Image (cartoon, rainbow, N blue to C red; front, side):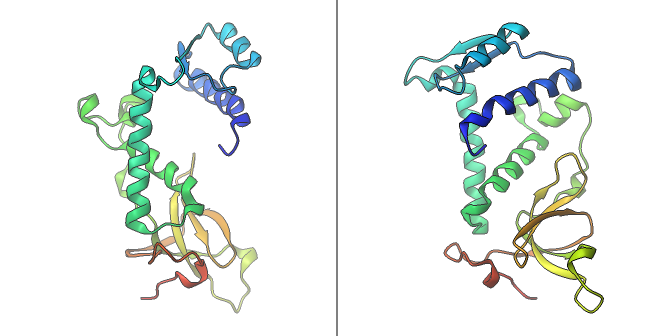
Length: 208
């Protein structure tokens, strides 16, 4: 979410998802006094759904302690990824999505050893699909981006996992574009980024 004004659309999309997928409604929404949470259209939506709208006192984030602790958990995972893989800040969104995805699929002592995904959906994901974060990979180029005489594979950086698809997300430093594909060969022992002070992707490719 780049702008707070987009939050209402994000919330309504999530609200529709839980209604259709899990046949439940959001019973309580607790937030601070930010303008994106206190607009008239938000109040009207809560009234229609019967959702209780609870707001925090000013400068008292501890009143929403569970959300604050989970937010800190996510930020700490993201921070560790950024430091250990030297990922440029331009990919922060991909780092956050990957971190949240891993948290949701890893077992937790808080819920008796189950993963949040297992607790919600009733089955365990195939962990063999997971790859080492931000590793180097060879990807089959789309047909429109190579000729008969050019290379059909290119070196890219693994970004994460496709939403709603069993595919991998990757970034091509030559075309400066994001893609999704399943035709990937991973070099998981080679990190794509080699220096936290290097930001030019054209000089970050490692060769075996």
